[in-house]
Length: 281
Image (tube, rainbow, N blue to C red; front, side, top):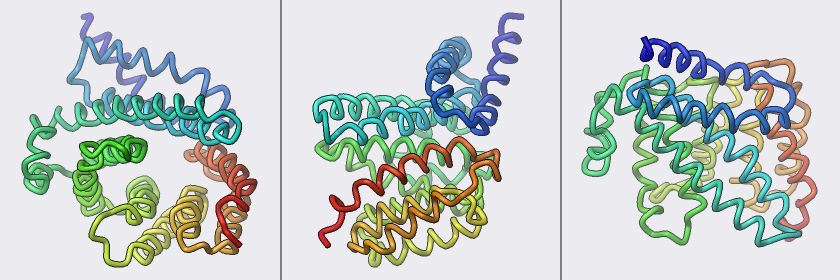
């Protein structure tokens, strides 16, 4: 009976992400999310095999770390370097927690995938199916974000090819996942990926795919291209045009992505204020 009750509550929490995603008050979600995340962890301690709950925890911790911890670190760095460093370290730990839950979700259908992934990524990921794409995406996104905040840790950076293998598999299984989320991820990832012959061109192809799949109604692809490619190429005009496009998006037009759009539009405004720092001319 207790297990059934835990499962039902777990199912409800696993579905709560869609309600959060449609909210129009980022500050409210920032304050509410920690309770929800800790409740998920408590339930997972009782039912570690609940794949939906593990996936929700991976998604929730990743989103919370980016929107309310890492982004805050970026915004205060100019005035308080020490606090910015502390927040980034906290974000890194939260991303690693999310990665662990993502691997837990995958392991429910593919036992020992996490250990096999390190010996032969292609073989370990071969049995995954389209049903695994959400877990592949959120595990890879959390892992990549943790690595990005661990650039002085060679062991962490050495895991980047594993993230690539995971995201490549997800793209092969469902390239249209979540209105182009995989392609949006690959805009930034292509610029950091070792062995990429023409990273900017690859990133732009993923940008085109992401915009097409999202019908231009998500800010994510525009910010990703602006930060990853326009800054790298020192293309100030493109950078500003991309931010303007992101800010012109009506967040209410796509309720499923309302919260993400509002959070990224805040970042776009912050980036506009940093343009003279990012571009030499």
